[in-house]
Length: 200
Image (cartoon, rainbow, N blue to C red; front, top):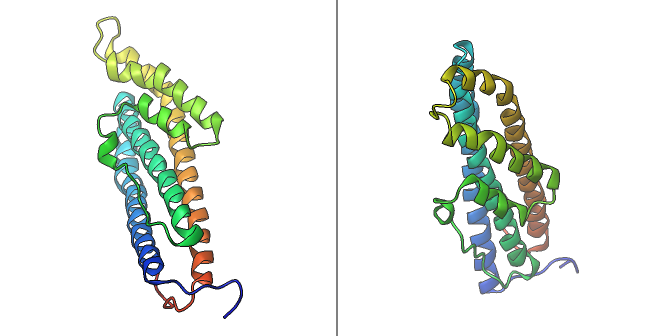
């Protein structure tokens, strides 16, 4: 046995197995979200773009941003809990929150929550700005008699690229988090003795 390796007791092995199981669930779901955006959201946006329906584009992008903010929060929470498990293998993976926890949260609430974990304060600032100056107008004032749909559509044409860039940044951040967790998981597997090859 190498000094850098350890043989887990039954509890440690159960904790490590639980971590690997939840890791697979988390990454599989993350990949499904990105595939949905690529295969369903963006093709629909392309059709809307050809028809100059920019309001509809912005509303669809708003929902995509909200989903990715939530998924990024969940990724941070996973790696924090996973880190406790992988540090000594004596702590079971435990994430107290679920997607349902945030089901009634506004985008503003989600950004506030993300700010607790995310070191990219430029991203947080841009998300807050987008939420207050763009998203809220299209969500809460779309049918306000002060604005015509034509004028709102013209404004949406100017701002939809801002939303698209935020989606790219959130997707990149989420992938970065998961890449780091993948490396940490692989390092842990090298430490653990008798862990079967080909598992995760």
